[in-house]
Image 1 (cartoon, helix red, strand yellow):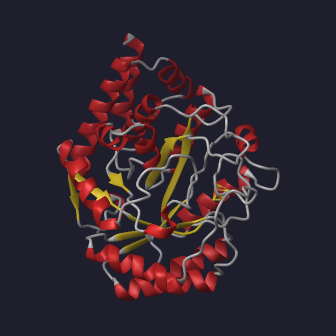
Image 2 (spheres, helix red, strand yellow):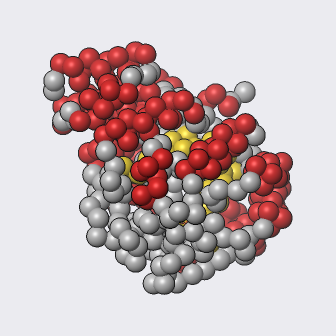
Length: 352
Ligand code: SF4
């Protein structure tokens, strides 16, 4: 490892920030040693703040309809090869009931931007889950909405909101999305969510088409400035039926390295080892935990629809029952000396 790389990782560990050109240098000079060095420091930081605990979120993918056409996304409106489904409010609540029995205390309601689910329906689902399971947190991941809608969901009881910014560079954003979607609006949504008191999650794809080291450095600066409670990153994986179907995927190594840098940048952040990481490598999630992640998001959606929610190809964990997933994950987490806890798993800045 180059001396300057080690010095910069040490500086990031000490000061929790770096200049843009320093991030660019770290990204461009990634090596196996640098990755291991950053991962060790990141794991130590995670241990100091969250101990050996790994938080689990029960993911309920309730609709794969979407009105948008993001170029990278497998469930984009224009992909005619997708078999579409919607879960009813009752089905969604039943997923949460089953998850509760399995020990989940956070449910993530995720879907495409599907106008079928009006604000009233979303609010009804949130309040019904909260009525049944008062000790649980609800995370929404349903895309860009008006501030009034976000407020209505918050008033109904939603605690957290995931909205990946995808890339902090407007020109890059425009190459990943059609003209009717704007980067500025997406960034504004994130600021609105924070203002409304959500534990807000941002994030980006690693290795997306056209991405440069400068883009990644700007992503890191963006999340430093936003200070989200959660950051979700995963490798870009091409999806059939999309304009990027034949593009190169992002790498395991770069994703792990960036996870570690993010942990050092925002020590208290909740950081999932994503399903996409598990898709590009059989031990991707374990390696993610060892690189600084402390959250896993197994799927609670009914098995019958699981393989229809494919944002990218070859997605894992589409065939198991939720209980099997939990057992499998418990073993994986134990194998790296950590443990899954029954807990809402709030960011410590949001704990009493
Ligand atoms: S990334 Fe999200 S908003 Fe874009 S097409 Fe896919 S589901 Fe829709």
